[in-house]
Length: 134
Image 1 (cartoon, rainbow, N blue to C red):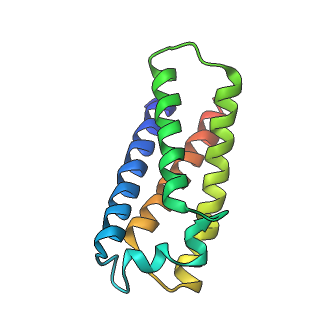
Image 2 (cartoon, rainbow, N blue to C red):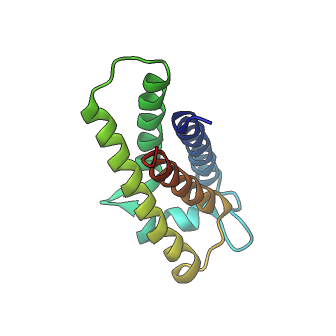
């Protein structure tokens, strides 16, 4: 399967999971076995430079969806745009690794939506790594 299709599917899944998380926070719904989505969202770890991680995540996934759609549809894209996207994916994977550690060991929350986005970001980084070998 084409790396760009996998990245597009992962970004769509990440966008959807993040949207569900936001909905759960607003509705104060349960998030996993030990807490509520709002508990995770209101922590220090739930923000990135004073902006909620969900906002950053939605923007990130939307950008990846747009760029990967352009690549798949053979729309002329700047090499710089691809480099920015790939850099953003690596940064997101690194942040996900850190936030996963914080979620499990510091906050001791088992939020399946959070864990899902961390796994999605890891898969995206692995796709980039696998794609660079071809």
